[in-house]
Image 1 (cartoon, rainbow, N blue to C red):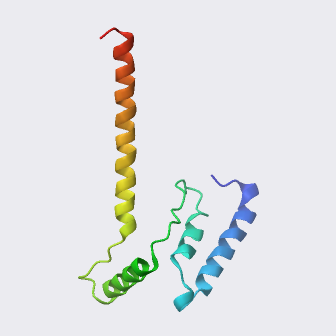
Image 2 (image 1 turned 180 degrees about the vertical axis):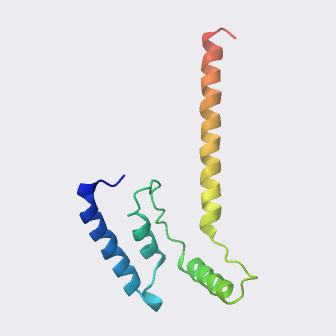
Image 3 (image 1 turned 90 degrees about the horizontal axis):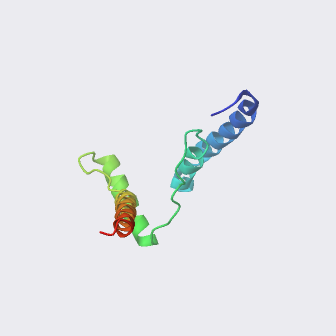
Length: 112
């Protein structure tokens, strides 16, 4: 939540980030520039995943992205979507494991 005291400072940070982002052209534009903006959003809760793919994989993804821009019938596939799905599944499995451990602990205390 942004307070009135934070308004001027926040607005300046946001302005500076947008100005920097807008100044990036061509090869200077990087996906990390987008994330710098996202981190400024007050509702931003999840840490930005800054893992980098191997260079050839990154270039391959860039080619797919550009192809998708020129031909919308070829949607861009982002490997980070798969990583996000995997991370979500890991979190689900961890919750299931915690539940099983709680249940197992309860079973032990009840003599079952």
